[in-house]
Length: 132
Image (tube, rainbow, N blue to C red; front, side, top):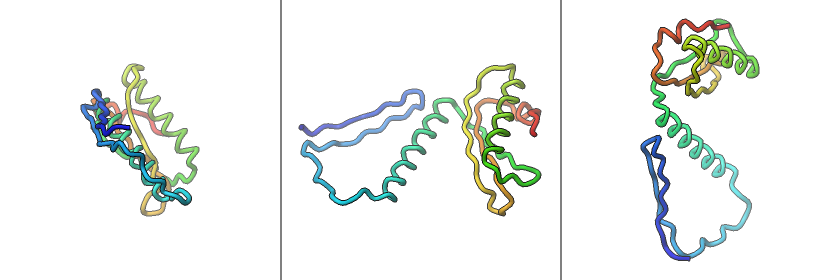
């Protein structure tokens, strides 16, 4: 194997990255895989993928949805988020919209809430969406 550089280009996200790959094979590490390191690597890859998705789709409006009362059921939360985004699509005339969301336990301990990011959408459209 010969020394080389690799480069990955993500034109939609206006991003690229590369690294040097030495020509000699890596030394065997031995022992079982480290679960903490594997988790960190998976987290890093997920962050990169989400960042590129947001950049490629021009997602630049961040918001949080919080329940008036407590919600502790992740399945109910998923159903409610689905209803919210279907309502947002209806509000925008039915066109598909790129978005990303994640849930989080509220630091105050009163249940789940949702963070989401969307692109060039007027906040008035978001506010008009019915919430269950």
